[in-house]
Image 1 (cartoon, one colour):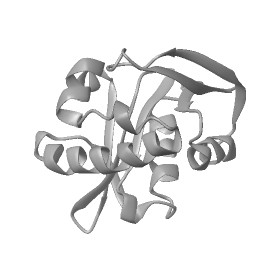
Image 2 (image 1 turned 180 degrees about the vertical axis):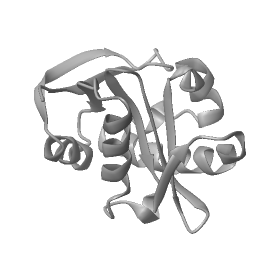
Image 3 (image 1 turned 90 degrees about the vertical axis):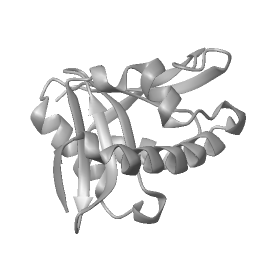
Image 4 (image 1 turned 45 degrees about the vertical axis):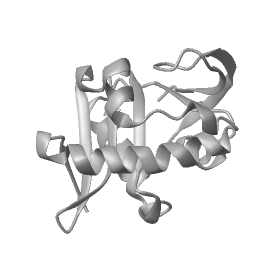
Length: 150
């Protein structure tokens, strides 16, 4: 597996990965009806405005992606058939290497697998917060708020 910067040619793969993985994420949070495809979510949430946008690739196929600011890992999605194989961990570690100031992450409450991943990377649960879902503000969500002090 290799990780590289996102390129325009990755759109179809990234979109498919997001849409399949996001449905699973929302199901864990009890928010299936809040799903928006990436073609809408990317624009509403400014995906291409993030200074870090990376894809994981295996044998020429994109299998996951991450987006971050200088201090927050904001997006992390892995193709469902590749989950629990180190792709999310590798993308997270790469983003933190490229942006050593990353200290914050939010994850939907109920997404225990990603909570465990982030905790294994040195993030600690700060609390559970409630607010409007970014990009789909008609939904109220609870999120795990995590912080890294290293």
